[in-house]
Image (cartoon, rainbow, N blue to C red; front, side):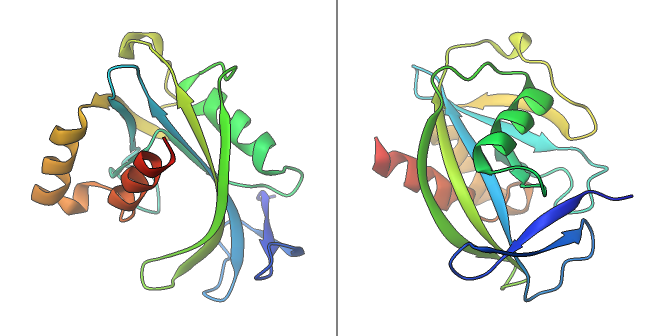
Length: 169
């Protein structure tokens, strides 16, 4: 039996549950996302596994996940963070939740964003290989240059997320 995810209305109120992989264009679901930086101002990104159905091999924020039936946003981000990159979250900061659309409205969801400032070398992370191909700290200027040179290597909203997190500091 496949996991069920939460389907919500335009006010983020639960209206139904659907099995993963059965979403339709009009469905709105819940996502949690964690942006991680270090004290040098570098951004931690993860590259999605090449075996993923959606956006394989693309670089994205450190952690993101779809909220399952028995979770809330907080439960989901803690679970995903532990599974995907093995981080302890004492300094996790909950930020604004907002409605998002991607791929010309194909994906519609509410995204609860979180932020973490942590100083940890790459070798101190343990990645979940089914989800994450690799993990890397990026200097902001280098990341912006890479995004403009190879935009298909990155999630479609990465520049928007960078601006969002710059604005909240």
